[in-house]
Length: 73
Image 1 (tube, helix red, strand yellow):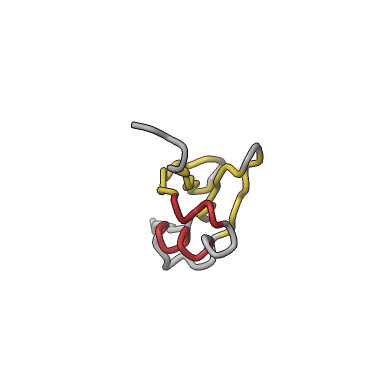
Image 2: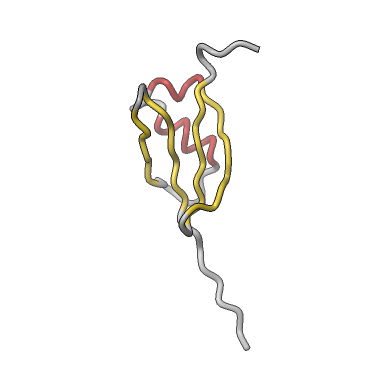
């Protein structure tokens, strides 16, 4: 019996005001930090964010970009 290996698609999310924005994976070879850096040109709030995750939700690997601006402690 052979093993079947399937790749789980990655999704990147972040909170912008009251909306949750879902970003597609531009390249599976990029690290989550590289993906965040790439999207920071389009979404400047990502320049002060960190990567949280990975969590498997609905057969997808979900990473969350969490902003650190405006938080204390």
